[in-house]
Length: 181
Length: 341
Image 1: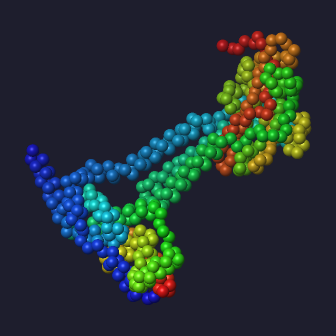
Image 2: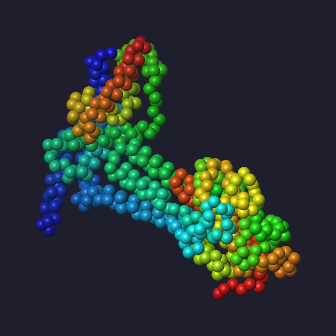
């Protein structure tokens, strides 16, 4: 009876601590997921999946102060899984013609800066999921290379090469869009 | 475009995707997680740690099953004796083919070791790909390699790559006639008990790969001779026909009179795809062989040999093909011969 009471107490403590921590970091996780995935509904699902995974692995987190980094990593993994499964659906390949088409459409509306951003967004949307995650962590979360490596579980050198490659593709897309004006 | 401009555009684009605070329904759903989802217990963690071990053991069990299957499915038998008493008969290398030298040209059963090694290697690769890497791409490549290797091995072991297609059919010692036998279209040989007849025909490499013919199988149906009994009357059996030796033509282009000076002892022969190789069989009759023509008899019967086993090696894997002879070999048989109990 005493053992049961102690166990129930421990479970309640864990539930409350987990609840408090995830509540504190939920907005950040949701924003990160939405920026990575680009779809608010799918980001909600990804964060919910991440919350379930975090609760299941709660006992592996030794230091609650590290919750933010730990949970971010789980969120990033959930986003990566969703992006990869999304890649199995047909993707519209980004070609100079399509970028020019988008620019022309935007120009008709008199919004050239929107056209550039649209071209950039299209290029971003067809990046490899890992490259996309690295770009978001670098330019939206302002993390260092080491910070990105920790969040994604990849070596720093891999992060650097992915960023280099991704930036090259984004630069190309933006340059084509601007030359087409 | 400079880096600052690019970075600024990227930051601006990403900021435009920021949705702000999480919706209330997500807060509510996440708050429910601890009460609706079970946590992993320590026992589950132990299970998770044991998963690689379980995967390894499972793979080993599957491999053992596959190796056993290769051995049992008739794709190959354990190496056995290759002649009377388990040793090849001696024969002068430079002399003609001696059809009475039992065991010459009779190969061991196909060696299963290379196929088993490939299966074990596939298993090790599967374990490494499953346990040691998290890359889906590497796992996919490993799966493709394993699948391909297994398909190749099982195809090479199970699809016969030699057989009769066309070419020469030459009866030799003991031939009587080609018509009038009990079995239609058989070559009729009149050999007495323990007599030897010879018969040659073209084997063709029917596959897409070059191969080496190692010899004829002791007995594709698993007869008494194969287990090492000598060519005595008892070993040949009362009513059976056995292939007891094989030889080749001295000049493959000098086809095809089966006189001794035209022949040579068996040796491993290389055959390119669609090419023929003329082989000479030496066949012994059982003790119930009649020893004379029986076509005029009122009551008659024949012993008939229709298939032989050919052992060959292709890209390092040995296999056996059961080849149907272009024309069956028939030997008149005593109608009142009593088989031993």
